[in-house]
Image (cartoon, rainbow, N blue to C red; front, side, top):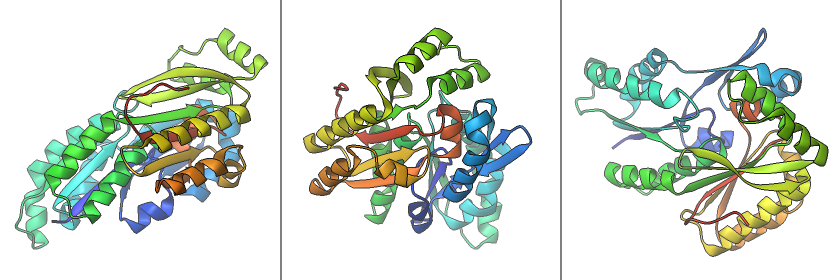
Length: 313
């Protein structure tokens, strides 16, 4: 059976991994003033757009996911011909309309695919499963990598579906933003007043950086640390401890809101990679999606993995 894998462009995966494994990306359009870019996970385009616009006015950005009709058209024009079963892995439905749009599109796709497949010479049925990853950005990558691994191992559709749905519940994404003022401005633009002016001013004055955790659809602060680089080192050390304890998949995802050379120079990162190599855990590092950066700010750091329940310490 030909199994396809679809992610949205908020999913932080290296471009070469996406291309090598024929992962289909649902783009998200980002508009800042008159500047518009469809986020297709093109790292060079993302960095160019970032340097030109996001650092100054990113909090004003409007992000628009693929509509129901755009998703329907993509499937009917291409995916129902190229594949027999498709897993569509989306950012948490609590954070974006993408999941709901994909679910609505799936009904039209399953009603309309037969003539398209028959015209292409396929008589077998087509099936589509939309799965909420319950996470965002680097956290979305964990289920996508596992889907690729299981497909390569010739796992059945039922096995892949059960595994991905269970894994979504067990994935933890951790993130450290650089700029609380940016985070507050972005939240206000979106109508979310959870980041108050006082807390943003206090955090910036004291150089306090929150550690945010995304798990099972909920994003919340789990620690407050002082200084970005010491905070990054603490996060890397924590991730290393979890790797040594044993992850639920041999995968660790890292997203960074800027050039990857900056990421690689952060204190503790080289040691984390050494630990992952020792434990045979593959590290997937990528430039954070443009969608991610306009929401959390330039220079943000994210680390994700699947593990048993734990506390950040």
